Image (cartoon, rainbow, N blue to C red; front, side, top):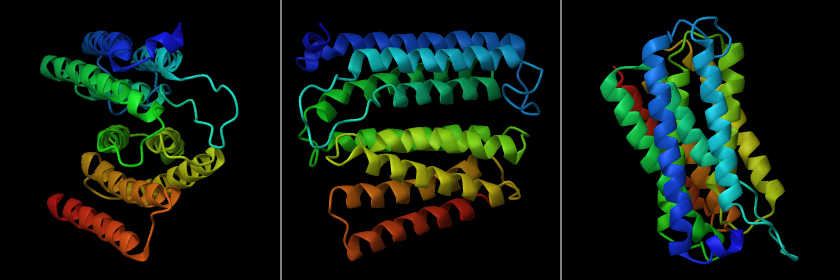
Length: 274
């Protein structure tokens, strides 16, 4: 039955629409509850006593959206394949809902709640609609995959930036950002024909780099969105380099270009944050 749903783009649209609506409604409900619970950035999510129930409900929602997306869109492996795919379809929708939950928890005004719900729905729909291209096996030169990569990096930025706005200790921030970044880096290379262990190793190394970058940023005055932009810039350069390497297209010139892009992004962020 699951294979029938994935027979073509038209067949996969209804599940994508359903998941998008679910993501939007969940975010809207979380936003309405946040307006009542009024979470504060002075409290550490899940650890602080105030509004702990909000973050517990948000965590359940994130896991639920991710699990349902996995059930609908991750194909079972049949027969031998030299590069078995990873079951990562649920990661990006789940992280989009996490970003939306953090957003309404941080800014629980009515316009932000509505905006977050719309962005969660459109983001989840975009993330899941691309799965047909990823599952097709012909992904090396598909421009639509740039949307997948770009969306993943934007979600990294939003999650990290919002987490850094909480007055939490590094003991909480570093592991949390490590997990979020590792999950997003694990799925950012979906569709690239390579061994799963290589993707897993790259994801863990990239997440470790992101967590290490967070440490000095906690002493940087413009903490929050600008600090998140710094981490996202580093993760962007890392993702581009590792993707080119996995696709056996990494040359000295390409590496220099990616390094230059990362440096340009960092300079832009530092200059604009003043």
